[in-house]
Structure formats: C-alpha cells, structure tokens
Amino acid sequence: MSLRVERTVLAEVVASVFKGMVGIEARPGGDSPEFLPIAAMIGISGGEDRMAVILRLSEALALKVAGAMLGEEAMSWGPAAEDAVAELANVIAGNLKPHLRAGMALSLPTVVHGSDFAIHSPRLAISQSETFTCPDEPLIVILARES
Image (tube, rainbow, N blue to C red):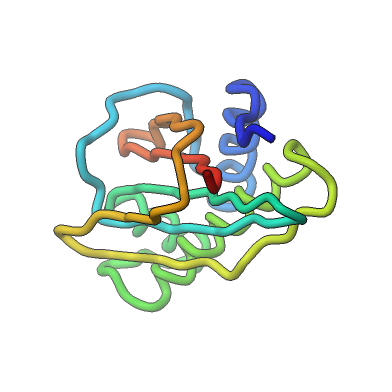
C-alpha cells in the first residue's frame, strides 16, 4: 500500500484545515528550508500498515496558529503553542485518513521543538513531501510509511 495522496487532495486538506481552524491561507509551493525548528508527528496504523504524517514548521507560523486558535497573540513557544501545533497535526492527519484506506487509527501527536534535531525512524521511509506557504511562512507536510 502506498501512502501517497493526490497532490490536489493534500493541498485541499491542508488549505481547508488552515482556513477553518486558524483563518490562515495555506498555498501549495514555496521554498523548502533545510531546517525548521518544529515538528509534529501523528502515527496512522491499521492491520499491517504503519504510517506517519509529519508537519515541519517555523516558530513564527506555530505562534500564528496558536494565537488564532487561542484568540490571543502567542508571544513565545510554550505549552499552549505546543498544544495548538499538536491539534493542527491531528486534524490534518484525521482529514487525510479517509483518503488512505478504511480501518486506520491515529496515534497521539508528538511535538518536537529545538534548534538542532533530526527525526530518525529506522522503519519509516518518506513517500511524499509537499511544501506550503502560510501566508509567508513555510510548512512542510511529510507522509511516511513503514518499510
């Protein structure tokens, strides 16, 4: 089974979630920076299949998301911003789930924030990576499958 969704479907899901949850436009395309300080990961599993949806984003975008979700400006990274990013990842993964296959379940989100880290999972292989611009900040959505 491939963990690939049509680019148009992924773009529609990301745009819809951003617009509906935080009132921010998410457009496909843009530069893909080498490093972004925040990563949020949701596991998706069912039967023999194990997958992940990973969001990579800047702190500036994370604070915009948190501020919009909380109804007040988020000034710095902390538990509220972490929760907002986790919920954003959860909703995007949940909206992608119907485009995979029936019987898939989501894990709890994991959020990492730092200036120098890499995500390694010896059994996950990236099957798709798409960059978005929200509105001037990058967002990378990565779909990975256990190999």
